[in-house]
Image (cartoon, rainbow, N blue to C red):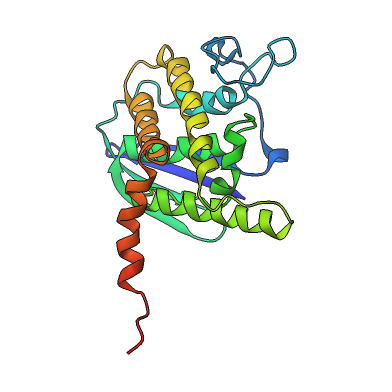
Amino acid sequence: MRVCYKFTFDNGRKIEHCVSTDEEEREAPAERAEWTQLSHCKCSNCPLQESKVSHCPAALDMQSVVETFQSEPAFQKVNVVVSASERTYEKRTGLEEGLRSLMGLVMATSECPILKELRPMAIHHMPFATSEEFILRSVSIYLMQQYFVMRDGEPPDWELKNLVERNRRLQLVNQALWQRIHSACEADANLKALLSFFSLASSVSFSLETQLQKLRKTFEAGEFKPV
C-alpha cells in the first residue's frame, strides 16, 4: 500500500511525501545525514550492533521528512490531503498535526526492530487520529493479534500487559529519535510534531487504564439490555 501526504500552504506552495508499507518499495536516501548514524543518540534499548549496522533504520526513513520540513514553523495552517488506494482524507489544520500523522506512518513502516511492531498500525493507517481513536486502534489491533496467538495454541495476553511494555519500549525509541533530529532542525515543526506523537503513544504506556475507562462509557451506551 502506498499513502501520499500532500501539504498545501496558504501561499500556494505544495509539498508531497509518499510512504509505502511494502518493504520492497522502500529506498534509502542517496546521501545519509550524519545524525542517522547508529551511534548518534542511539536508543538505550536498541538491539542493533554498530559493527554490523552503520545507520539507524528509523532515522534513515525519517531523513527525507525531516530535511523537507526542517525550516518550517509549526504554527502554519495548511490543507493536507492524504491519499491511499481505498480512500482520501482531507483536513485544514496546523502543520504540526499533519506532520505528526505523517511521521507516525513513517515510523510504523520502519525496519527498526522495535518500531516494526507497529506495522499493523501502518497497514491500517488513520490520518489525524484523536487520542481516543489512537487508543481504540492500538488496543483493537493488539487484541486481534492475541486472538490469532490463541488460535495457534499459545497463551494470549488479554490483560494487555505486553501492550503496555511494548509502548514503554517505543517511548525510549521516540525520545532518542527526538534527540537525533534536534540538531537538524532550524524551526520547530518537526520537533513539535514528534512531541505530539510521543504524547499519543505515552497514553498507552502511562494511562492506559484511564483511557480504557473513558472508552468503556462509549461501549456501554450501546449495550443490549433485555426487557
